[in-house]
Structures are given as structure tokens and as C-alpha cells.
Amino acid sequence: MIQLMDLQKRFKQIEAVKGVSFQVNQGEIFGLLGENGAGKTTTLRMLATMLQPTGGTALLGGFDIVREPERVRGQIGILFGGEMGLYDRLTARENIQYFAELNDMRRTDINDRISYLAKMLDMEEYLDRRVGKFSKGMKQKVAIARSIVHNPQIMLFDEPTSGLDVTSARVVHEFIRSCKDEGKTIILSSHSMKEVEKLCDRVGIIHRGSMVELGTIEDLKKKYGNDDLEEVFMKLVGDNHEA
Amino acid sequence: MKLRHIMIVLKKELKDIFRDKKTIFASIVVPMLMLPLMFSFMGYGTKQLEEDSKKVVPIAIVGGAESVFVEYLKNSPLFNVIQTNDTEQDIKDNKIKAAIYVPDNFDQTVSKNELAEITIEYDDTSQQSLNAFSTIRAAIASYSEMIVANRLSALNLNQSILQVVEIQERSATPDKGGFGFLMFSMLLPLMLTMWSSVSGMPAATDLGAGEKERGTLEPLLTTQPKRMSLLMGKYLAVTIAALLGTVASFSGFLLSMKLNPGMLGTAKGLGGTSIIVIMLTCIGLSLIFSALQLAVSVYARSFKEASTYLSPLAIIILMPSYLTMLIDAKAIPSIYFHIPLLNAVCIIKEVVAGVFNMQHIIIVLLWSLVYIAFSMLFALSMFKKESVVFRV
Image (cartoon, rainbow over all chains, first blue to last red; front, side, top):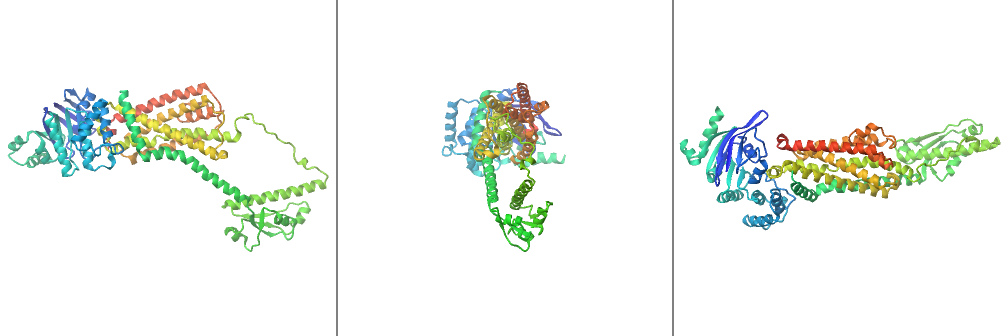
């Protein structure tokens, strides 16, 4: 379970996240919807303990991000879009293994787990080749395997399909669904309405660092009397623009 | 901080560094080959010059009529006397290397024991012409000596009357190798300090800014280890790369010494204790500079930015080395042993010269520990700072 309690982040002059609170239950996919610069990435970075909140806190799997950051990191898996952040000079196996070792897995478990993931993601053929020359889709699979090698209970996805072609994006979507089926707690940040509608159980719309709306997609559509989530989004965000 | 985490990072970083052809080239191959190549080219150049100087020099003689002196020059195996109409143009065109202007009454002036005047025309921008100039001077000097000897014997005097003292030299350090050793003791401290300080640069750039640029730093920060462990693993990897670079440079140095014994001097009498002190100093320097370079590299947004910040560092490192190059190893001012970098050069200089001042050695080692601690804390504070790590 993930629980954000008045989470805040201020960078010098800019208040990037202005006290965000919500809860994500086990086996649930929560969509964080917002424009570029709305505060999605900053929120996720705080949950992943890369950034320290300047106010409030959050509990991930029962651990506090401020007081027990190491324990929190052991609970989470992260997948970014765009730059996959793989080491080009290492093989796919070495990339995955490095993160498994850093997450305190035992050697025999690591080997079993990598074999399992390679089979599942259909990447056995290039498992022992250096990542540098991989296609984007191949890299994406390695990044996916790396993010769940330690079998985390919580998954954080930050715009995971940005820059991917349709086929690779589908792989990622299937992966997110399989995480849900395994009972993981999931936050997915995105600016794609379609993606969010397709995958998420509930969404939070974040704008200029504040949560402006929260609920199931059906609730939101009903509340704003519009069947198009994009229209609902524009209504919320557009209003604020004028304000 | 967990040792296991540090070792995981260290192992991975070393693997990563040494799979990178660029880093291997910059930190091992270039340092190993640079000095030998430089010195063999320089050796070849000096050899060419030496050979040139042995060749017969084409010159022109203007005036002098049929004087004995002109005959002396014409008969000398050193010169090939050529007839010309325009000496200046022919020197410029490289037909002759120099021209000698001899007055027509030269023999008479000499026989009257008066001062004779000779003009040598040459091109002072050409090495060959300069060589011809000195060959001509030497020939004139030996001709003058001949005349002086004749004048003295005409007066019934022995030539030794011109010399008052004859000096005998004796080295107080006959086993040290003389001038060759002086060169060695001047160059080695300079080179060692420079190598230990700059050799970690390619690795530091890659492990900090490189990781940022490739977007691998963020996922790494979401793994369990504390930042301190991640940094320590990287830090040790950079230090090891720096030390390997130093060893590579040193082997290049030894190789060039073998190839050109005259130029780089000779290594003699470096005992076990000297080697231990030198090694400790180099390790200390590598630890200090690896931390500083890593800190700068973590701050930089990209590979290119890191290189821009780190290149001036190499120049700063060179300054104290040059400053101490000419200082006598046996009379180094005590204050120097308290100044960073300078003290490392000085302590190596001392032990190479065979001076073992325990007080100096301890001062330098203690200071090194302080610098290591400070540079490490600096690197850690950078690595923990959000505004630095997420500076994009």
C-alpha cells in the first residue's frame, strides 16, 4: 500500500509539489495525470527517496520515506520512459544482475530470477550481448526485467511509454497489467489520457503541484458530465490556467 | 554504508571502465606510449642534427686575397668553399650555410700583432646555419691558438704561461650517476605527482557526469544502498584507475630512459624505503584528486561539461611541479611541506635524492590524510545534494 500525507517539495523559489495526499491500495493501478512540469516526476522521485520532501511524508509498504529510505527502496521497482538508463558496455544479464545484487538478492536467486524473466520477456536470445547496440524495444525489456528483478511489492512508472513505438508501448502496458495481476501496488504517471483510461483503476489529476481531482474514471466522467476524459482534464486544468 | 554494496559497485565500475576503449586509451595506452614516443622523436632529431654537424659545411669566403688564413680554411676538411656573387641571397637559398668576410690585409695585420677583424654572415633563424657559425668560430679559434703559440715561441715563452690554474673535479657522490641522476631527480617527482593527480580524470568523468548523461544515475539511486556506499564504490574505482594510469606512465618513463639514457638521466640507488614513501605519496595524491574529480564530475551536467571543468585542474596541478623543479632537494624550505601538492613533489624529491627526513615524511603523510578526508567529504556532500545530482 502507498499512502501520501500532505507531501510537499520546494526547490528554492518554486513550490513543485504543494501538499499532495492520496492512497493506493494493494493490487490497484493509480494514474497520476498531469501536464509536463505539473509535479508528477517530483512526486515519484520523492516516493522513490531520490528527493527529500520539504514537508509531509509518505508510507510505502509501511515504511516511511523520510525515516527509512533504504527499507523503502527495497520495496519499490521503477520504470522510466525516454532514457532507459542502462549501461551500454554491460550485457543485458549484467545490467539486471547489478541491480539485483544492489538490492541484496542472493546469487542463486538472481540466476533463477534472470532466467525466468528472460523467458517471460522473450529476451533469452540477446541476454548475454552488450546493451549498447540494442533497439529501443530490446532495451525497454531489459529495463523492465531490471525493475522487477527483486520482486518489489510496489511499482512506480514515470511516463513509461514516452518515446516508444506502438509495439513496445503494448509490451509495457501488458507488463503493467501483469504487475497488477501479481497483486503489486502501482502508480503510473502519464500525460496520455488513453493510457490512463486503459490501465488505471483510479486517477488523480495534478496541476501546478496540487491535486485538483481524484476518483475513478467513471466518477470523474459522471461528475463533469462528459464521456471524454480529455475534456474533463481540459476543464480542470484549463480553468486553473485562467485563474 | 555497507562493504558489500561498495564492492558490488566497485566491481561493476571497474568492469565498465575497462570495457570502454576510450578510457583505456586515455588512461593506459596514451600515458604508456607518450614519453617513449616523444623522446624517440627528440632523440632522432638530435641525432639528425649531430649528423648534420659532421657533414662538410658549404661556405663562401669573400676577400682575404691569397692570405694564409684563407688557405687554412680552404684546406680544412670541415668546409667546402664555394664561389658566389651574392652571399646574402645564397644563404637564404640554402646554397651556402655562411659567408666569411676576410680583409685583404689580414696576413699583414696578424704579422704586425694587431687585432684583425673578420665578419661572419649567417642566418640566425636556421639551425644548420647556426651550426656552421659555431664550426667557423671553432676553426678561427684554433687558427688563433696556432698564431698565439707561434708568437709565444718567438718570445721564447712556453704556452703554459697563459694558464694559471688547472682544476681537477671529484664527485662527492660517485655512485649516484652525476648529471644523469640530477635530471632524473628533477623529472621523476614532477612526473609522478602529475600522473597520480590527473590519471583518474577519464574514469571520474565517466562515472559521474557520464552516468548522469546516460540517465543511469537515477535508477541507481533507487536501489537499496546508501548514497555513501554508491559513492565509495565509484571513488575506489576512480582511484584504482588513477593508480593504474600512474603505473602505465611510469613504465613509459622507464622505457624512454632505456631508449635514451642521455636525455632522461639514470635511476640509481632508489632503495626499498624510498620506493615505499614514493608509493604512499602517489596513492595519497590519487585518493585526493580522485575525490575532487568525482565531485566535479557529479556536479557537471554532461561529459563535455565535466571535461571543461577538469582540464584547468591539470594546469593547476602542473604549477607547483614546475615551481619545485629547480629547487635543490637538499635544501627545501620547511613551509613547502605544509602546502598541498607541493609537499608531495618535495617529499618525492627528497627521497629520490636519498634524504630521509622522518619529520618531513610524517608531516606530509598527516597532511595527506587531512586532504583525503576533506576531498572525500566534499565529494559526498556533492553526491548527496539534490540540486547537484538532479542538475539538468
